[in-house]
Length: 148
Ligand SMILES: Nc1ncnc2c1ncn2[C@@H]1O[C@H](COP(=O)(O)OP(=O)(O)O)[C@@H](O)[C@H]1O
Ligand SMILES: [Mg+2]
Image 1 (tube, helix red, strand yellow):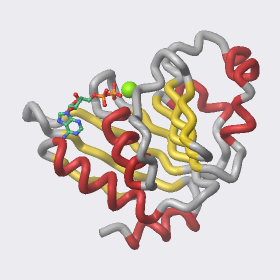
Image 2: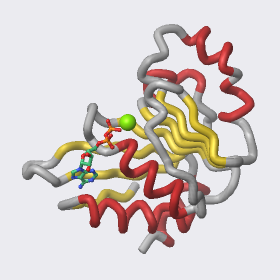
Image 3: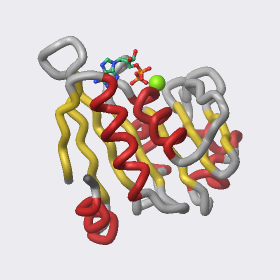
């Protein structure tokens, strides 16, 4: 697990870029943290750093936004896991693309066993965020050593 304290958006941007550099197609990233913590902000940085030039918006109303084989979910509005089946979540969660899911702990039982967990907490000052990144397997954890 690695933890970074980011004092402002530009520090979070730098960390997001560094994270994007170790990602591989097939990776799954579960993001959690309070409303306004920066899950969308960090996801946008990662998605853009992966080469997406489209305007990256929050998927909070659409549940999922697709950028080629990069999938960005926000499952906050999912009331029942049945809705995830209706969306056909398995096609995204178990794809060979890259999947980022905001509020992932709300659908914990559906997550692929092997994934990265990103937790964002508000720090003490206005723009401060404490961001931790953890892999659920030794293989994922070892890739974190390459993060600058
Ligand atoms: N250090 C920081 N890292 C990320 N976002 C920050 C930071 N400081 C302030 N912010 C602001 O916090 C807000 C986070 O919003 P958002 O990413 O939509 O949160 P979430 O998706 O977790 O609800 C943005 O307006 C962003 O500009
Ligand atoms: Mg969001």
